[in-house]
Length: 360
Ligand SMILES: *Cc1c(COP(=O)(O)O)cnc(C)c1O
Figure 1 (spheres, rainbow, N blue to C red):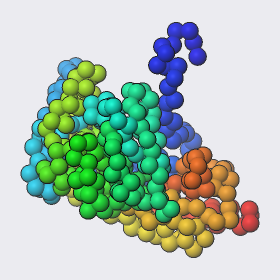
Figure 2: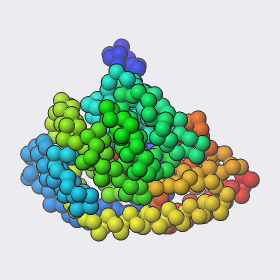
Figure 3: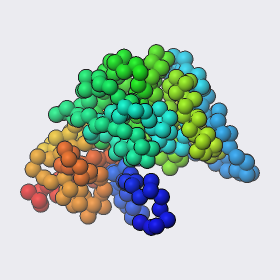
Figure 4: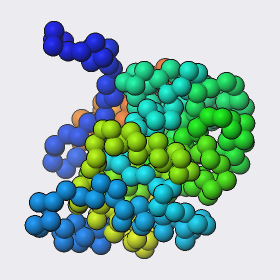
């Protein structure tokens, strides 16, 4: 604290990201990064762009990337125009703009009590009133609980850190029950098992779907995220963006992401590998006595009825394996474990077997 800090700064409670330790040979299963590298075509595009062009500012509208994203979804889901796409410097930035542009109203916004911990941080930053809605006993979202006056709704699907997915039919009920509120569906993990709500954007003008290149496209280091929705919603995001940073996406990020979304083959291959490993890991954790929530994401959320989660996380760390533990009511006995390669997951299971044996 310093006398130079603004009143706003004094009251902030910043988000604490999962740590990025620089230890050699670490089995890093704590921040849901993809264990497989980015598309080789994306890397080649980035290499090609590293030259004299970096002297020049990038396209402030990121037209090429927005066209590529629109084209990608048009081939799977029906027509989507570039005016229905907004891109930002990571989906965290896209979400931040959505809080200011679309979720700040008189009524409090609603999100689950167990959810992405960045949401309350943005609420405090932008002075957005919020109310949390408890997940049910099985850590599922009950849509009926969101049928009440609100200034907007936001939740991840699949939810984080539970990994549980909400069916599209439930999202549709939510949209119909809240025609006067914007519903933001944060699909950071959708490609690992859920049904994307992008198919609904042409029918619901109050729906904003946010996705990222960080997880399923293995480009967390490039910082690219996007939103898809009605042009009026996209316009609102553009107005905030152009009042904040005209060039959020640099030239390397734009060309890398454009090539990545076009490389369907790499995307399919790597996401299927993650899904297969998740099935194996879920079985193996079950055999060790863990209760594992059904996951549609690239992580699993698991608790052991007889072993303290924080102690287990610490013991794993001493063996060079890091997972995420949240010191938070309802979930303090869970570990969130990112799906790594088969080898990394085997190392995790071997370490847990040892730890559970010695701590028993
Ligand atoms: C990882 C994650 C994000 C942020 O992703 P970036 O694009 O890397 O900023 C957003 N929402 C949820 C739920 C996430 O887990």
